[in-house]
Image (cartoon, rainbow, N blue to C red; front, side, top):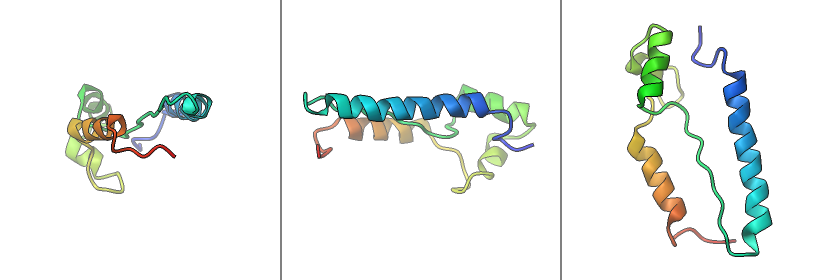
Length: 92
């Protein structure tokens, strides 16, 4: 069983949020409002621990199935949010 099995609704909802984010970003860009969303894969959280348990794996084993060879850390997401919220992001 893959970590991606049985996730069609979850993945679909992430795709819907991504599409909505793009539409809202375009709609509000001329008003100076930046709109972004972040969609990480597995991050070391309670949800990831539960997922690993369901698949009979450790977090390390679960992470080895991903191209980068590990799951992300919460700080990885925090840095992405910080960057997107900063003035360092160019408005095109």
